[in-house]
Length: 162
Image 1 (cartoon, rainbow, N blue to C red):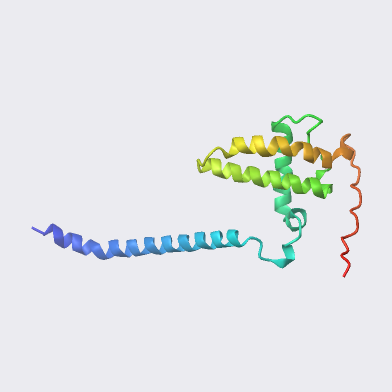
Image 2 (cartoon, helix red, strand yellow):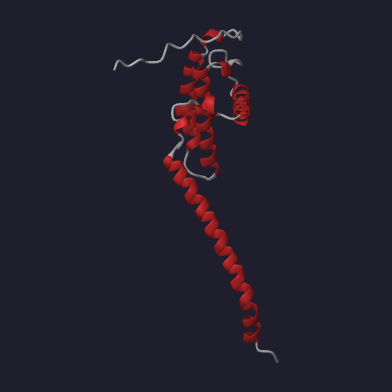
């Protein structure tokens, strides 16, 4: 009759190999998480992007996502003419920046909700959505009739005397 301990000893190298692979996978996941945390703590590292707005640095895919989200927001929240986001909003840098910030806050709130962390979605509604819409509407005030009015030209850059 075979000894049960002998059978177990034969399985041991396979178990050890499986555990080593699992530990290696965990190490890779940990390295990835540490790299993401380090990047988040450091913030934008490129001096090139230091003073550039989201509208300048965003990819075509990000613009497409944001545009789809704005359409969703207008429809799902049944925004009225006083706070509906005009279709020409991408032509207005100030409005686009505020809308992108609102969208990113919404994404973060959704992520926290999915992770079951706190009450971020209600906070997003109370703190960000309904307080941001009037500011966005102000940035788009010349386009209330759905006819685009080009934004005013920005003043020249600040010139410090030396």
